[in-house]
Length: 95
Image 1 (cartoon, helix red, strand yellow):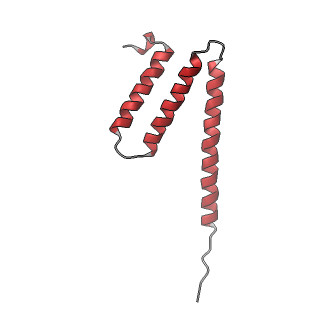
Image 2 (cartoon, one colour; image 1 turned 90 degrees about the horizontal axis):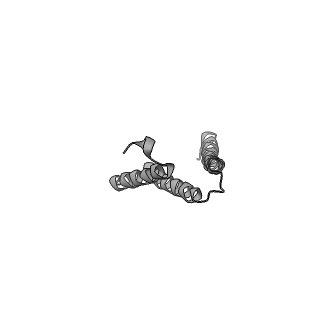
Image 3 (cartoon, helix red, strand yellow; image 1 turned 45 degrees about the vertical axis):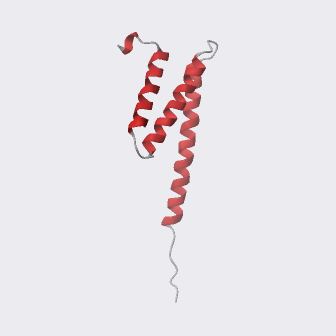
């Protein structure tokens, strides 16, 4: 099936199905597998919002993506702060 002839809902549903197939193929728990679960969650969230014609989906998607980016940045900042503390650690010689 050509993507050009598919609706956005069909494309998103196909993305969910593809992600589920990749999850099944991935044996160990990994960052990639967790990302696939989050991808499915986000696409499902978008599909639910598309059902309401009064919702401006582009604004909502942008808002949700900013929320996710902020969470990622907070995690990155916490890791950087931890590395700074560890990097500044000076062991004390003990007798």
